Image (cartoon, rainbow, N blue to C red; front, top):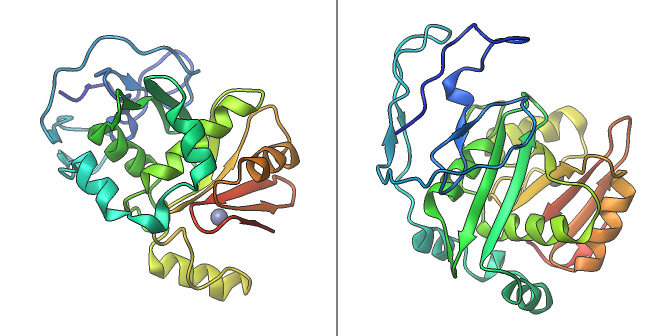
Length: 244
Ligand SMILES: [Zn+2]
């Protein structure tokens, strides 16, 4: 079942609201935002699609989080060829180990997820669900469904470059958020792989974005773009292989 955490306590900072605590797949343990990545253990036996975090005094009242009953197989089927990895990286992926792990933290609020999202030939539905929640549209506070191959791209990159884990700048966007960005900046496309859950913008701690860009280009797994500025980041998507 979902882990309950006290609110408003903690040694150096308030213990985060349980809304923002997510389980690593196959672990059953929450990973608090802003905490350093840590190994997760304890096999998870909970198979329910609902967890009740109980009344939360730091939120607007009791809440239950209804997890979408996503089955990995149907999720993968929801992203047919348009989100499949090209043959080269797919072959590389198939030759790797029996588990695929990721460690992600969202730049907006340091919400984290770390765990195994694929093992023994199959995606973990609960892990994909938790990852899609982490990668939700923060403006609309709405989760979409992220193509599993997005996580595969991150996993392949994770193995190729120095450092550990990724900082997520942006991922799923509702059409309304995307349209607002387009109107505001005049350069964001009104249609985007972010809207279809096929894109993620990330940074790699300890590695400049140009280094991450180079590794992503070499991977040839989809679209890659560098966004410069004070805090540059790299866009990755499961569309055609291209760069900008
Ligand atoms: Zn992007």
